[in-house]
Length: 118
Image (cartoon, rainbow, N blue to C red; front, side):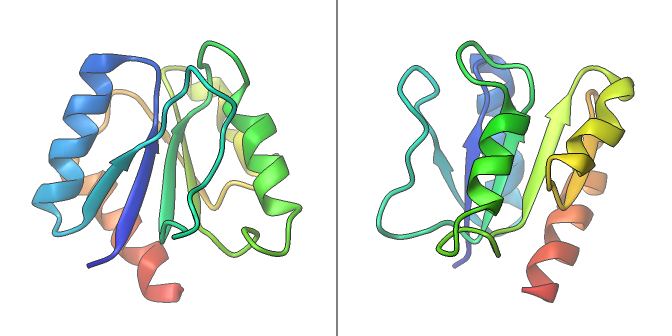
């Protein structure tokens, strides 16, 4: 079962994203956004991350992950309530971007497409 790591500082959004990921047939893991962003030894197959979190900006984390050989090939979807952050998300190295709110089907389609490519 493919693992999707979710990073968002909104508890309600985390719960909703976990539910969507599980409905899609994936294993959901939640990142602790109150600590420095770290990945476990078992890397996720995809990362779903909010841009504006308390602490570090999701675009900064994305750039860091894409610059390391160990993590550069992990697909990352950045999320934001602002449609205006689309371009900056892609410039940060994100594989895709979604503006909140979004439909469950649209999110699962993007996840499926990225995981098929992997």
